Amino acid sequence: MTDTAPITLLLVDDQASLRESLAEYLARQGFIVRDAESAAAARSLLLEFTPDLVLLDIMMPGEDGLSLCRHLAETRDLPVILLTAKGEPTDRIIGLEIGADDYLVKPFEPRELVARIRSVLRRASRNGAEPQADTNYAFEGWELDPLKRKLIDPEGAVISISTAEFRLLRAFLDHPRQVLDRDRLLDMVQGREAHLFDRAVDNQISRLRRKIEADSRNPEYIQTVRGGGYRFAADVLRKSAARS
Image 1 (cartoon, rainbow, N blue to C red):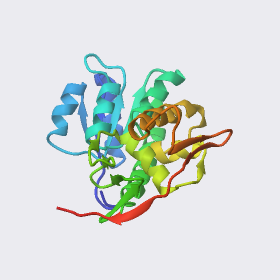
Image 2 (image 1 turned 60 degrees about the horizontal axis):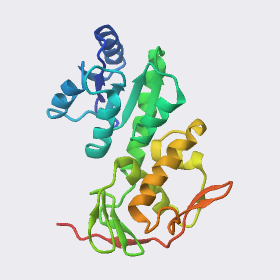
Image 3 (image 1 turned 180 degrees about the vertical axis):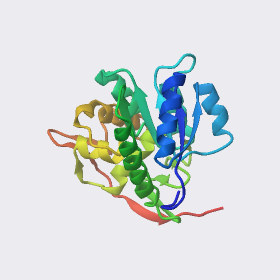
Image 4 (image 1 turned 90 degrees about the vertical axis):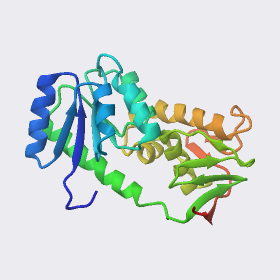
């Protein structure tokens, strides 16, 4: 995506009236909009094109939006804004935990949606430009390849890591031995400040610890700082990556 290229959105919602009216509004704002009435239809469209951002309803018959969001976070790394009729914090936390970049509770003002779309895309553009093409992170025998999103343990085995876990680990590796509070981590990982969702960070850290710590209950790398947040307690090196 460039500053002059039109922004393409994939809108996934089972309510035809909302989908059609919202697609029409977004088109008037200069976006190219393709829409799908279900997660299955969205998966088919994603085989044909790659949108700049996905607008995804949570409550849909068949596969729900959270399941599709998890799939996108693990396989496509596309910015996702969840559209939800649920206002409970737990539902929002789940969405943030599995990799959504933002959420909006129905009913919402279309102008607010446009503002959030542009905000998420600005952050995605900044984050996408960060990794150097020939540089990996290394710590205590571990290696993280930012471009391939590959985590390799000291024995050389590739460790499966979700998009949310990758973002969190990279935030720590970019700021080794610094205390990072939950608000700052959530802003780095999810691209938004949301102090109401501290638990989303805590749950992601628990999962990441199980991936990289010998004993996740007594972590060596990701340490809890009482009253402050978390600190990555290891030296991090940048190293040139051998590219095939």
